Length: 262
Length: 107
Image (cartoon, rainbow over all chains, first blue to last red; front, side):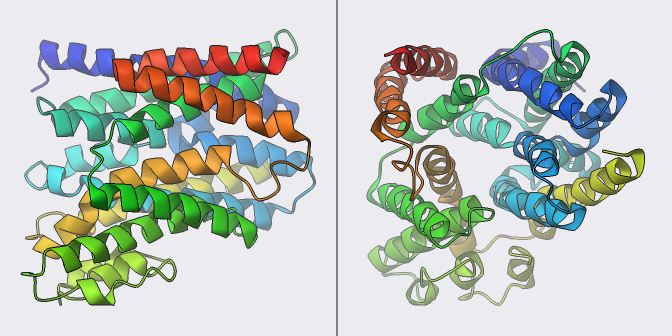
């Protein structure tokens, strides 16, 4: 089922992510060791939870004395943005088996979402390759974390600088988007939305809410522009995190309701 | 962090993460996606990348700690944008970003 050429495609596409994950995975492992997690625990976090932002937040909040319940709530809230990625990949996953779709969706991160999205747009990409890209990335993340936990105290990586590798990847993905009117509106509104969320103290769900605002406004714009479409556009007010659900309201399709979960 | 706290954290965070990652896909999978929904889904990538970049670079209180600590990543961003548009390469963008940011912090 898995062709050798697909493995090669996936590995090539995964290289920037894998290197970035080495750069931030080692500091993450070091940080986890600082709160008393051993290499096995760090491995389990990376293998079963697999969240860069989450695995930094947990030890950081623990060190600052946050109660466990607020750590769990904050981390879960930050990770709600993953719902967008899963929804976005739905069209590409229509005709694949359930196990493949499950393992693919379960191993998507910000970075692999970005790379696979771009690859699907360019063509010559498939869900099996996207899954392997996820697994290469996850392997790099997991190994780097365990190494970090094992060598903690021996080396020091300036995290602020290392983390900019990830920011740079997102910047590249952003500026190489097709700059249509509607996409530019989505971009500007999403950025404003994130800034507004942070201003109101909502930094946890800022990425999710900001992105939903961008999607909703761009959708409203595109719907008004394509006046032939009878429904949907006028209702998509960029008010809050309900944007995504609102944007689908012109349809009575039951599947829309599941998209934005509390 | 005790083993007990570890297990609670792993199970709760792992399950909420898995739900967020998998449920939306399976709710939409195997159904005819209406045209409107498809159009909305198409705006997720630009909006998500913009939100991720803004989340990393912008904050209401970013200049409180002085001008340069907040301006350095913005200046490094300009370098990354130039390289990204020229090469479209994620790898070169990441290398440029890290190098530019490190050099700018040395100033």
